[in-house]
Length: 225
Image (cartoon, rainbow, N blue to C red):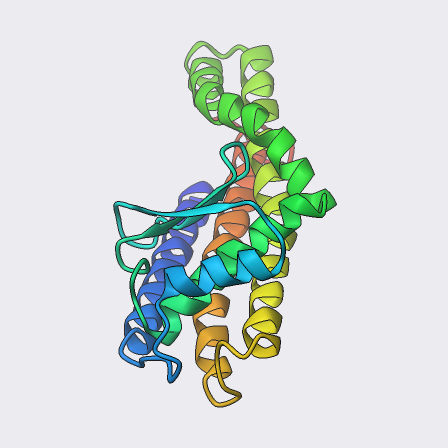
């Protein structure tokens, strides 16, 4: 019962975080920046002023925005690229913040990048070993699956400082660069704070799931019966 409770709590947290960010984005997507600049224009200007040779291009999807350090490309979703809203400009500045992290060798970003292949492999193999371990009552397989899953948990935790720092950079850049007025800054901050909740929720859910697996395996006083 405890395991099911943890699972349902994790689902609830994830759904709440997703609802929060979508609702907040929709709310401030209706407020157009006084400058009249589009989010992609703001991103390009921020990167140009910072002396970064990073491109900006559109990508399909809603809030699929990201910075690709390998291609040195900032990709903005359909809901952000070409948008003049306070919400879109905040998101674009956030992604530009990641580009600056990369250029400056921000340690948490470098660590997260190095963990990507490990986390991807772990997330793919973890449940194979975990399910096999439970089905065939082979402790070694279960333990190996939990180790793989732990890699994904570590990745989620390392992601937190990366995302929060990028948001802080974005707010500072938008204010100092005059892209938004003092009255407009709080709106973009609320959007970025809501987005940060999704990463926080993801990390919390990963921790809860790891705790559930440890409990089921008997490491935390539970059992697999």
